[in-house]
Length: 212
Length: 212
Image (cartoon, rainbow over all chains, first blue to last red; front, side, top):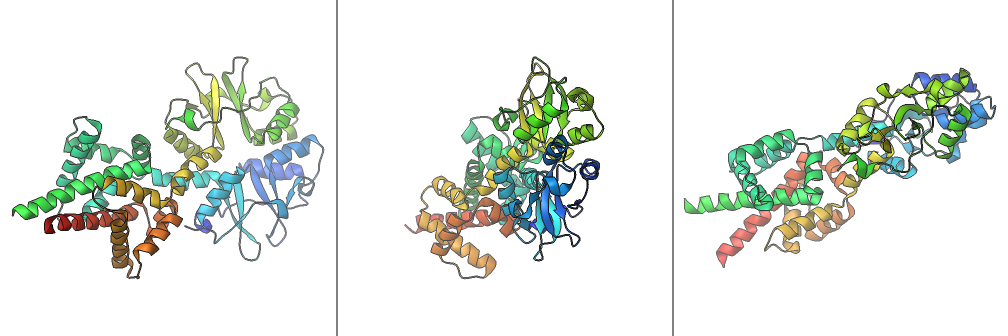
């Protein structure tokens, strides 16, 4: 996934010669804590945050130019960078948003941590049953009921609790990948559980083939 | 994972009777775009953002009380809520941070979207080889080399490209879970690939046991 797929194209910008009153009004109206400073061709010349504005007001500064961070000090990403790079930069520099440039240095979007949270959290919101459905399609000659039965057996073995195939099916329909990895104690442990189920179901399939 | 495990305990707070100058200085020094308003017992009475402060400055307001959002309008989470709930709230309300309360209504921390990005991105940063190591430990009687060989075969089958077991081993040591799910086109597809590998390796183990 590329930066351009998760960036906000409806970003706002301010001009260097804009008054602080006007710039703060624009930021408040659009509820933006930070915004790029653009020249007439929409090229990045700087960056301001709401905290630069509060400081500017207190110190009697007049224009955006007086308070802005100049381009050389601004963290940015390219529209063709991976979304992962934007995630790493947002996390490393603890910024609320990052301007996105094209090859001409023109600002084409802004990436916000709130957009990143939304994108990342989608993964966590996938239902566990979707993974089992994929597993069921992949494992030829194994029925859904056999898969649930094997899952219940593995769960009983590892937790010691009595769980039926029906209980298990209900549970994976209600729980998300995020809940499952948090509940099992991590991605690797979650996956180990799936492998144990896969191994049991395949062993049973082989045994059935042999007895026929 | 609970809210209290990912919240920032070193948060700042402001008092309702604090002057705007003093409050903005404190927010700038600590680089906080938003902060809880607390009474003398650290109970939540309101919330202000840097954009409330810029508006307050423009309109000649004097104290935090004059610009704050009152408690009934503030989004918050409880320290024992799941981290997932905080993620969903941050995503839904597009806020930069959320105060965390205990049973007495006392603010015990603040959750920031940047902390959430960091926590969520950890999952994406897990090396794919860690998952294979877990798989190797789980599958008794299958060696690491057999696992890599099966992985190379499954990759050749699905992509048509010649990949050796050594190539595959190198690739999973260098790539992260995030890259892998983005490259394979989603979580389910990534798991389907792993399950295909698991199935092949188990089939080979069973065949070997039978021939002995």
